[in-house]
Amino acid sequence: MEMEFVLTESIGLLIAALLVAILARRLRLPYTVGLVLAGIALAFAHFGGAVKLTHDLIFDLLLPPLLFEAAIAIHWHELKRDAAPVAVLSVFGVVISAIVVTWGMTALLQWPLAPALLFGVLISATDPVAVIAMFKDTGIGGRLRLLVESESLFNDGVAAVFFALAFSFAQAGETAAPGLGNFLIALAHTALGGTVIGLICGGLAILVIGPSHDHLIETAVTTVTAYGAFLIAEHFGGSGVLATIAAGLLIGNLGVLAAPETRKRTKLSDKGRDFIVDFWEFAAFLANSLIFLLIGLTIAGTAFTALGWMVLVVINLLVLAARLVSVYPLCFLFQGSRWRVPLREQHVLWWGGLRGALALALVLSLPPDFPLRDEIVVAAFATVSFSVLIQGLTMPWLIRLLGIKRQDA
Image 1 (cartoon, rainbow, N blue to C red):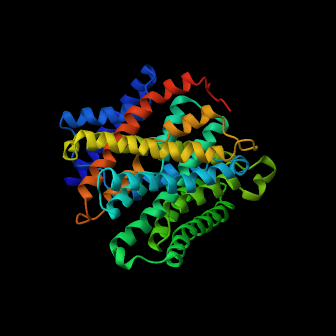
Image 2 (cartoon, rainbow, N blue to C red; image 1 turned 135 degrees about the horizontal axis):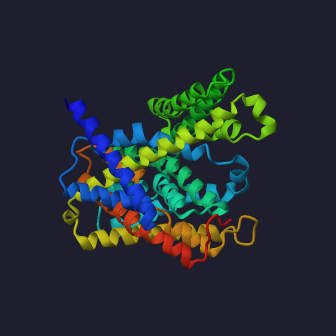
Image 3 (cartoon, helix red, strand yellow; image 1 turned 45 degrees about the vertical axis):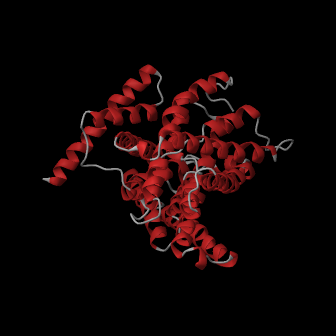
C-alpha cells in the first residue's frame, strides 16, 4: 500500500509538472520558477508527504541523468576552444567564492569555522540543473551558453569534491586537520579517481554499443553508464558527479555528436543517435520537474524565521557578492586575449549563477549531530529559494536589457 501511495503521488507530481510546463510557455515564465511556485502551492493545499526531497533521491536517482544529458550535448572542440576560462571559473571560481562566504559567515554572523566552511563550499557552485533549464527557457545559445553551462557543470564536480574533503576535515577536528600533502592526495583520489572511472565506463559503453545496431540496446547502455559511473565512483571514494560528466562527454563526442566521417568507428546507428538524444532530453525533463516541484514543497515547510529575516538577507547578499568577486576578476584575466568574455556576458555569468539541486543534496547529507546543521539547512534553502525565484524570474528581463538575442553567440 505504501509503494502504491508513493507511485500515485509521483504521478500526481508529474501531472502538475505538465500543467506548469504548458502554462509557463503561454505566460513566458521560466519553467523552473513555475515548478517551484507550483510546489509551494501544492504544499499549502496539503498535497505531498510520501515523496520527500532527500540526499539519496537527488544524488542517486535524479542527478545522474541531468548531468549526463548536459554532458553528451557539449561538443569537445567547442569546449576545447574555451577550456581556459571554463577551467579557471570552475575551479578558482568555487575556491574564491567559498573563501568569501566562509569569511562572511564567521566575521559577520559569528559562525564557527567548520559549519561556515561547509556552507561556503556547498553554496559556491552554480547548479547545472537550474542553469541549463534557465538557458533552455531563454533560448540563449552560442558561446555564452557554452561558458555558463560548462562552468556550472564542472564546478558542480569541483564543489562536490571540496565538500567531501571539507566534511572529512571538519569531522576529524581542527587539531587533526591534515597537511597540504594529505589534502592534495585526497583531492587527487576524489577528483581524478571519479574522472578515470567515468572515462573507463564511457569507453566500455562505446565498445558494447559497437556491434548492437539496435537503438533500444544503445540507449539502455547509455542509461547503465550514466548511473553505473556515478555509483561505482562513489563506492570507491571518487566523485560520482565527475564520473558521470566524463562518461557523458566521451559518449557524446565519440558517439552522439561524432562527425559523419568518424561514425563508422563508433558503430552508433543513426536511429540510436537520435533516440538517445530524445530519451535523455525526456529523462532530464522528468528529473527537473520532480526536483523543482519537491524544492517548492520543501521550501513551503522550511522555518526560515529560525535564522531571522535579516540574517537571511545578509547570507544572500554575501553569496551574491562572492559570485561577483569570483566572476569579474577572473574574467578580467582574459581581457585582451582570444578568450575575452564581454562585459555583458559577465553580467549573465554573475546573475545567472543559480543554486539548486546540488546544494540541497549536499546539505541534506549532513548528519543530524553536525554543528549548526539546522541553520545550514535553512540558509541553503533560503539561498536556493532566492536564486531560483528571484534570479531565475529576472533573468529573461536582464537578457533583454543587455540586448542578448536568442541563439546569440
